[in-house]
Length: 347
Image (cartoon, rainbow, N blue to C red; front, side, top):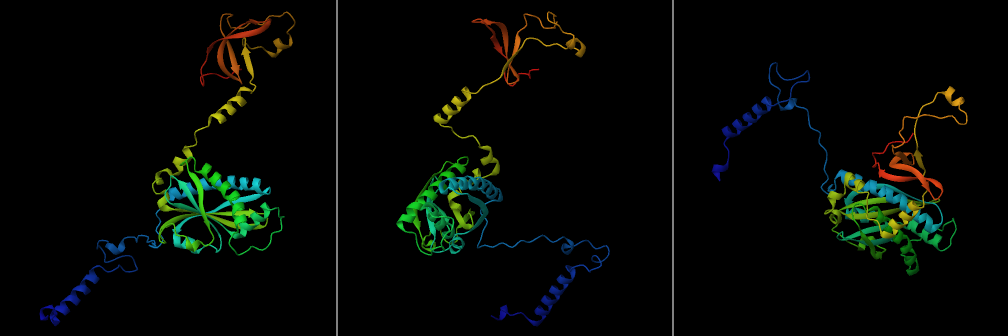
């Protein structure tokens, strides 16, 4: 043990070494630097900006993915508001208010209790998603579905009854339908309600410290306003993170069309009327020549009689044609297509 104890001379030498090191690496004076001619030391370098990092709330979702989710659900909010307006036969406004990432425990403890806590399945995504509908807007919707007027009663603080749960499915079904349409360009989801709970603290779909994406909407029906929350655990969308980029989901605008929709579009197009113009020849006249034209006058052109005519559809030349007659009426016969978009504008 005595070999581990420093002598007085060793302690003095250590203290002197520390003081010498501090003097050599000390900060320059306020007038602008260290000693004249001395090189700039580490203290003269600009300080790097330090940002605090909270290990309890790690940001596992990239900013580009968050922006893509925001843009995607902005369009969903408009469509869902229009769908609710049709259901309730009144104007319903749904606005996206926030897209944040936080822990599951923070999300659960921020909710009211009792509430309408819907556990959703979204195959092929793993796990559950959560749709929480605030009682402050849910009960006025139920009252409206049951024939109530604009004046709503105070919001009840109780779990939903069986009849009210059946009415809520009319809202959640429209939510899932519009949600599937919004996500169709990213991933085709099969959404369904697994079960409905009233106490969110009794449901644990992921560990409390797991990161979730909270997408908040504000629903306004007249003077009544409430919050609707969609919670997406990070582990559910971790596999498709590469698809959640602004360039990817915006660029994938083309989706598969059903045969019925294609047939309907074809029928509508077949019945459309188009303007068809055949140009016999072109020439230029002065205003004096035009005023002096009389019956029997001949206008000469540079077009040869054997040269094909231009047939234009909606002002765009599409075919070469030859003049003639059919069943006692003037007609033209299509000779060859000009190609598209190689056709030229008709005069």
